[in-house]
Image (cartoon, rainbow over all chains, first blue to last red; front, side, top):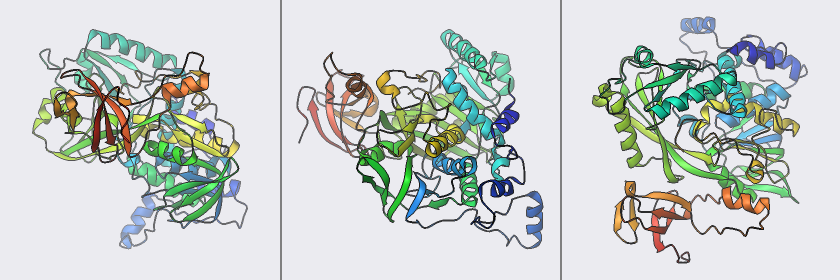
Length: 456
Length: 88
């Protein structure tokens, strides 16, 4: 079913196919008249690496420019995570708008972009979600070449485990829905799972017996900070200002319209303002004077000490909430379910940690002697139907990209692409049309709570 | 682990409770507009700071009660019964 690269490339402008090493030069020709301000971007390459080896690697320069704020921009994006940076990049690349600022309270990629389990997948149930998330996965598939930055995408597959007859039925429906939506998925028998993940306890006497499962082969993981840095570097090369340590304290208004922001580094005016602040979306909406259908929760994850390769796929057990993979460094990466009470504290509850580790050890008894190296939590923006909001707010000139909840990382390219579209044109991108704030009034929800496979 | 002070049983581990979200959300009348009904169902203040919320001691005495909790520090500043007005 999958023709990922070709399909992604078909959506790009002619001459801008991912993989073209001259992409940035093409951009310069297309979007910038000769002689206009375009920072030089040195392409990373194996040849450059080799050449650098002979000069003691003293040739490296900063990957992107840490800018100071100007007084005005065409578009200002609040939030320098993956979604904000991707939005800035696609504003410049797809729409030729380079007077763009990304303002970030802390450092780029330091929020949920640096706090997830780095899994990318598109195993959603409804057509609207499948279209959006599979577009995202297709963009991920071409992203290293597109950005000339190795995001270390590893399509090692995702196996969703069924622990009961009812799980098996639900997964048959789930996999069929994916196929109907043009996303490949395969049901798995226990022997097939044993072959793919021999470390799993698949004995009939297991505490959590596995009866089967299903497989999205194109799912996998990517290097989280490379995604943030790759987008930042490519956006900065197209003239985007990335401004760190710059907290938005208020919005500037003229009558009802938003005309900029008041930040800890001064006033910045902008024709359009976009919020991409994940768990802090409600705080920013509160400053602007409206409410969102969002509750912020802590979602935690943890890694063990690094060990030799033992698990070369991603295992999700929706019944227990455990989400297990092995990083390229060798750490066992364990994602948990939400701490089910509102929280802005970037730390997880011990009760959830305990239950998720118990489930992980029941699935992988051989992990019982591993030491836990780190644990952390990100504050995620959960909405009632577990689907995002990408579009207008009640205030003119103010737009929002939020509601990704526990699944923001995998959606970074599509979130950025569609959010850039609405910020540039004022019209919703067709993929984002169903995902408007207005659906919470009309009742036209896209209830992916079950389909995303994570207990919300 | 967070200790939740049940109004009947006293402080117990968080794992004995479920949180049921923000308190004091008034249900609008049946003649409410779509806007008012949607806001009642879905839209929340979601404060970074003091939040009044409902908890239930589900694996204990079963009682419902309200607490005032800071969503950043998780500090609980007051506990009060379902029918009581929020603390000032």
